Length: 169
Image (tube, rainbow, N blue to C red; front, side, top):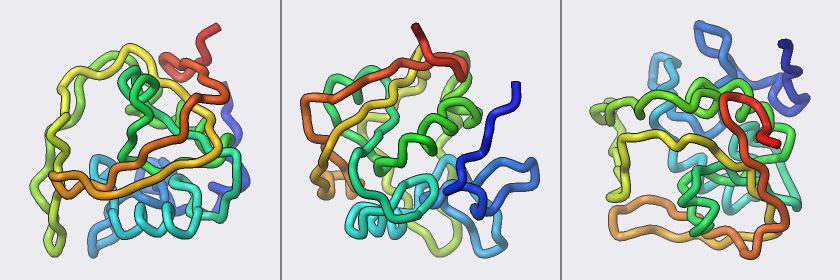
């Protein structure tokens, strides 16, 4: 199945496998992305300048977040909201989101010149499904463990569930 790359992601750089490197992904001094690490400077820019977390382009409303069951229930996130088309593309193409089986990758060592903030709520088992949640606003701040934490406005306007890269009906 061929999945169309959203217009907003056409200009994003790619890794050696051809995967789009999201705007908030940490990239080391040699240009290598580490998809397990978010660049908190860019996360903060997305939140304060209202940019999409995947593409880095300006966005208005509506806002779309991706997360597992706890995110649906608690409306709390570490990754900034995205444009709907970028989020749907991620649900289908991101190896982490598009596979329900497996475990999270181990927490890496801090790259040179970076500090890692690791949330206290890290779990090893992946969710059986991920959701795309639609809202109109959010607030954000720092947690006790120095993570940028985003709180989406509730109630959700819409929630769709995805498993293995496909919308659950």
